[in-house]
Length: 205
Image (cartoon, rainbow, N blue to C red; front, side, top):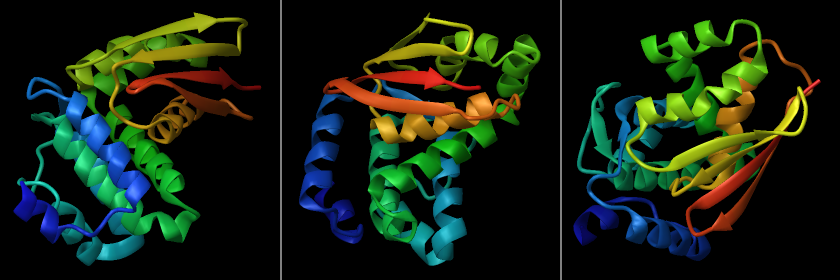
């Protein structure tokens, strides 16, 4: 473990501390689909090329990921945090790169069979799509609970319990999901409510 970390680019102290806290709460049974790893790596490749991708891969034992295979979320955390630290300066910071990774992951997911089913069920309704998101997440990751509360036709709140990614990542995910059905003026604001619990205020025009 320590040898793998030596190969990876150093994380800022605060970022490294946040990563360690999240890793400590993850178990071997907590897995995510390979598409999320590939989405993060694609976002890194667009900005930093293959050399940047190799630096990210140095943080995990795997060197390639199959989209619909399951991999430990601990590896995804290490890879995503490394990529966000590495490429963040080009986008305005660590959180901005996490959002970009979330957007890329959504693009990849919605082009998959499971994602196309979600879009089909939603029709032309962003609200219906968001309502079905907890089902979509269950198809993509093995951990966490998610629920949606609506305060209006275009305003609501998505609550995530025991999800390991920081709010910025899912801000990118949710913005891309709602915009996928043509919604305009999309606003997504995430707030951490516990070590791995978050809630997201959603609205669009």
